[in-house]
Length: 137
Ligand SMILES: *[C@@H]1O[C@H](CO)[C@@H](O)[C@H](O)[C@H]1NC(C)=O
Ligand SMILES: *[C@@H]1O[C@H](CO)[C@@H](O)[C@H](O)[C@H]1NC(C)=O
Image (cartoon, rainbow, N blue to C red; front, side, top):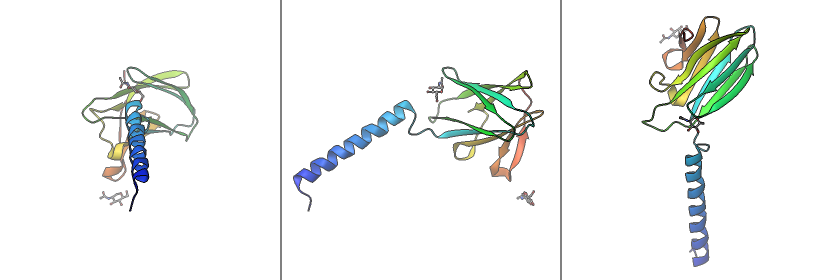
């Protein structure tokens, strides 16, 4: 049997946990659900910089073979767009690495290889086939 004290304790704990989860939703940290995995498949470094309308994710240097993960919270029914620049040997290429209208990644996980001609998305649902895109003009 639970006494009054432990019931009160349990209730406050429940409220505390609920508030924590709610603030997590609001700040978008606890439930960051979308992971865009980007692998540099070139033999030279790539300087990657991705932005959405309000946030600049800052530059990241990817050495050959290195991976970067762009992580963000995606709510259902909203649209999301992350545009990136990829600097390779002093040349700057542009590509939208995440576009909720284009991408339908399994379990919110997207996988990209950066290749010589542009970015290729690996589709794990379709037997690891990939679709390659050209850099944006
Ligand atoms: C951009 O991304 C940040 C980090 O995930 C997020 O807090 C912000 O709401 C996003 N802005 C837009 C316009 O989607
Ligand atoms: C998946 O790929 C492997 C290796 O390329 C191939 O042997 C297999 O037949 C493919 N399966 C399907 C369902 O396409």
